Amino acid sequence: MTSNQEDSSASSTTLHVPEVVPEPARFTRWHLLTISLLVLGYSGYYFCRSDLSVVLPLLIQDLGHHGIPANVAQVRLGFMASAGVLAYAIGKFVSGSLADLFGGRNNFLAGMIGSVLFTILFAMGGGFPIFTFAWIGNRLFQSSGWVGLVKVSSRWFSYSIYGTVMAVLSLSFLFGDAAARETMALLLGAGMGWRGIFFTGAGLLSLLFLANLLLLRETPQERGLPAPLTNPLNVYAARDLKQKDTNPADNKSPGLLAILRPLLSSRFFWMVCLLSLGTTLLRETFNLWTPTYFSAYVGLSNADAASRSALFPLFGGVSVLLAGFLSDKLGLNGRSLVLFGGLASGTICLFLLAQIPGNVNPWIPVGIVTLIGFLLMGPYSYLAGAMSMDFGGDKGSATAAGIIDGVGYLAGVLSGDTMARITVNYGWRRAFVALAFICLLTAIVALVLAISQRREAQARLKELAVLKGIS
Image (spheres, one colour):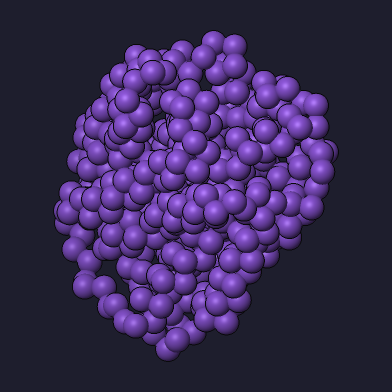
């Protein structure tokens, strides 16, 4: 078998294969328990993540009482947020491989307990040095959560339902985010200060940590169930076909280089990383600055701004469910088309949002922001979810998710410091114009990916058939 054949097999991981008909996936109460624990656990992460976004207006006011002007405080907090995103991105590259080598459950639990400790430290801090150190530590530990979730999922569920399973699990960072923001909005409305919000979030995540520690298992075999089928077109398919009869042990337990090499040789994988750059920047910008935009520009109260900001992830969650179910029906080819459609439509909405004056009915900008969440979050969820599992199977899914997410969050760094400077110096409307152009460029990448897949589908399928014949 030639290296070109291996690369061709690697590139085919995002292609629809009508000839492969997986057997029905067995779904038991243990599968349901695993999904529930992962959804609730990762939702809990957002009580120690969205807290900063929700309390930013209060934190800026509090710093103002200590002699720091609002504009200066906003830029400093934006820099702190960017530093946290950078730590999160770096952590993704490391934690993904750690999850593939040592288990997703360990990563998932470590992220929880680390996030709790650093959230408490932030709440006890009194200035930017402690705030920045605590926020960086929090985001670094949180980088272990999603890749751990992906790894556990790839070991529990058949590839025939990857789209649906990851759609449900993605609700944890959308509905979970929305629930966290709404809960914190109620607490703010009741008069709780920003420190109380942080302590409450740490307490809730601690309870979810205990539940997962006691009940979550790494594989279905630990519950007496068989291992599920993995995608036959994952980037390790050629290697597995070659080694299944000669060296089964290596086939089951690849080293770090054996995990990385097939992923990094797939050009489709790198195109997905480019998509992650644009979509993560958009998502992180709205996650961080939506309450501040609603408060400072639209004119809502702090509690109302926090509550309305929950609509972005809430309707994004609806989008994720629809996109996930649709991808299982359309096949793997359809994901890039859904990506292009959502991004193209989101570009139009961003240009519209840039035209909204500050004295308009508040529900108009709130409605457009909500629609943007619906258009972007479903396609975004593919990248470090179902697509990562398609690429990596049960061997490299966490590494794939870590690299895709990590590359994306390198661009997400701009969502804090850079967006703060743009909004302070040029205003919110020009900031949305900049985001619209970013969304447009990302949509073009999605279109190129879709066209490339269509042109090369038949050739890749023939080459995979040759590899199967050789094995």
